[in-house]
Structures are given as C-alpha cells and as structure tokens.
Image (cartoon, rainbow over all chains, first blue to last red; front, side):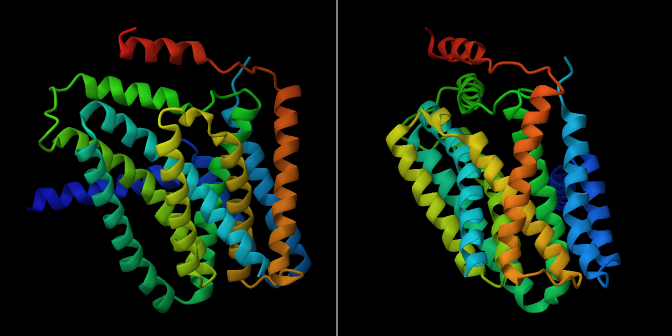
Length: 71
Length: 263
C-alpha cells in the first residue's frame, strides 16, 4: 500500500518535472524571470507593458537558439 | 467578448493537436489489438480526465484568490506556450524533424505486434492499457489548458465546451481518414496555439501582478499579433542566419510502415 502510494507520488512528481522543466530548463528559469519582472515592475505601468513581452521574446530566442541543429 | 473568442479558439486548437496524437495511438491499438479494448481504454481515460477537471477546476476557481491564480496560470501558460513555439520554429526552419503521426503509428503498431496475439472476442488488457495511457497522458495537457485558460478568465464551462468540440471534430475526422492523420497540419496548428498560449500567459501574468494593459482585453489581440510577427521573423532568421536545415525524412517512416505491414 505504502509502496504503491510512493510510486504514485514519484510518478506525479516526474510528470510535473517533465512538464515544467524537461529538456528546456532555460524556458522554466526564463518564465520565472518574466513573472518576477512583471511583479517587480507592477507600479511602472509603461515599463511593465513593454518589458514583460520583450523579456518573453528574449527567453524564446535563447531557447530556440539552444535547440538549433548545428550544420 | 474578444478575449472569449480568442480563449475558445486557443482551447479548441490546443485540444485538437493533443487529441490527434491520442487518436493515433488509439487507432494503432485498435487495429492491432481489437477495437473493443481500445474504445474502452479511451472511454475510461476520458471519464478520469473529466473527473479531474471537476475535482480540481471548480475548487480552483472558488477558493484561490483570482490574482494569485492569474500569475500562477500565466506562468504555466508561458512554459507551455514557449515550449510549443520553440518546437514549431525549429521544425519550420528545418532544425528539427517534423512531428510525424505515421512514425508514432508505426512505432506503436510495432510495439504491440510483438506482444501475445489478442483474442478478438474477449477484452485485451494490452490494447486497453495502451489506449488508456495514450488518451490519459495526451488528455492531461488538454486538462491543464482547459483549467488554466478557463479558470483565469472565469470561463471554465466555455473552455471545457471548446475542448469537447475539439474532441468531437477530431474523432469525426479520425473516423473518416483513419490512418491518414499525418495529413493534419500539426506544426502550423502547434505554432498558432503556441502564439496564443504565450500571449495569454504574458497577459495573465501581468494582469495578476497588477499591470493595467492598455485597452484591457483588447491587448490580447495586440500580443497575439506581436508574437506572431516575432515567430515569423524567428523562422526566417533561423533559415537564413543559422543554416543546418534538414528535409523531412519520410523515407525512413515509409520503410518502417512497410516493414510493419509485412510488405
């Protein structure tokens, strides 16, 4: 019973690890930075509206560059 | 109104992409192990997923403060959306193999064909489990999208309805085209959904943390246009500046299908 529960917990944890981090840890870290910037800049109206999308583009560019197939 | 339409489109398209993948596995299980077990496995998985939406979604909407929910869900949508966009850009620019439903079908059939011969009359445990796992695992992503988009906009019912509509459409198409699932333009759909999920992610993460977007919900459309432009430019840049593109290798897949079919 306990071992079965342990297996479910491990499988549940593994599902979330694969889902959130998987083979693109830079996306996970980048999203934390984007959300942190959104929270940190919430009083800077213009800054936040511009910075949040631009930071998201930077995360996408970095991750895509990392995933490229080398010639 | 505008955000509701975009939300329903995003849920519908994302659900359709995942359901095509699930359908591929169910068709493979059905043709090799018998349709009865494949259908039963799929049906049990759908019931389990619906129970999860009911058990998690309703308390989520009523108990968690809306701003906290929007920040967490915005982050979740960003992780999912950026991962899909990244893959779609890499595939469109030739830096990654196209996702191939034929290959998934061939692989699943090959795995199932190695097991003990099923009896067509009784239930087949292997066919049941493979269909259940395929539908449940692909469906979990649909559930996350429905819960994320539905609960942050307080439109869980509409989001679930959009996912249900996608299930009906994909099942209908599946019945008609059966094994020609590779004809579905999956990468283009994934790119569109990635753009929408990323836009919603940025919007909700900002909204939840106190940002007042100009034009309120209308800024979702501006974000969609912005990320669509970024994606198009990224594909062009990856093709021109970072060559290394490879063609879609269909010969290998065709050979594998022939091998499985004994041709």
